[in-house]
Image (cartoon, rainbow, N blue to C red; front, side, top):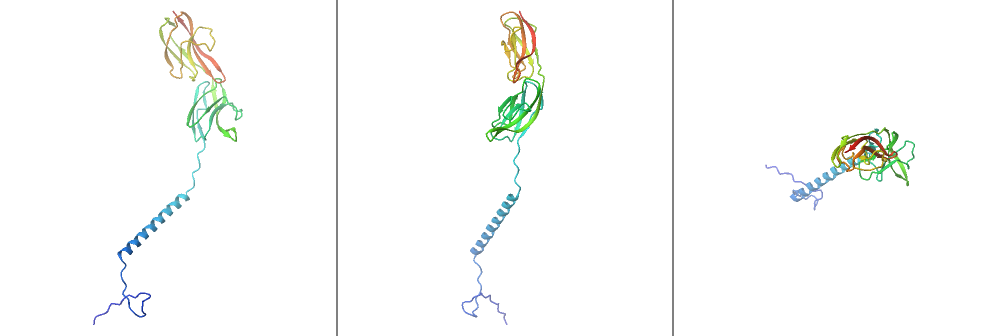
Length: 240
């Protein structure tokens, strides 16, 4: 005798006791179910990723920092590197006991991360500062001790030169931006001018001798804050 297959019953048949054969889900229903499952998984992964990022501790902002030599020759240029400076920051060189609104040299930093400052022309103890306005008045954000040594220089040129001739010269010193090597008559004031070159551009140059024969003096002239104009080295030269 053949065994009859037991039919599946719906929970609520139309008529009590009437068997109803279960129909398979259409393909579209399975596709929709799969799509919904995939969407739920995607939202879950995004939520977990967002939670992990938000859960990380915030990185503390970088504090300003200075990088520069602590000792240099008086009158020389000082190169300073700056990191994380606030807008409107300035670099300054002052005496250690100077208030925040007083300085010997002040340079606006702007968007730069590096700047050059002329050192005072007198040897001594100073302070490199990073300053900015706070509440309408200058405030010192960072400070670094700075000392300068006595300035010195050397010059070299032929002792005798024909008038109007070109001759090679050399000058080494603090090499500040306003320093110069100049040929002038002896006894001229420190500000006197003549054939010259600027050693911060190149320590060697070619000058042209004056047409007037006689005794001259080749000088290394430093011009720096505090000291003003000083003759650091001199050599006698005769123009024939």
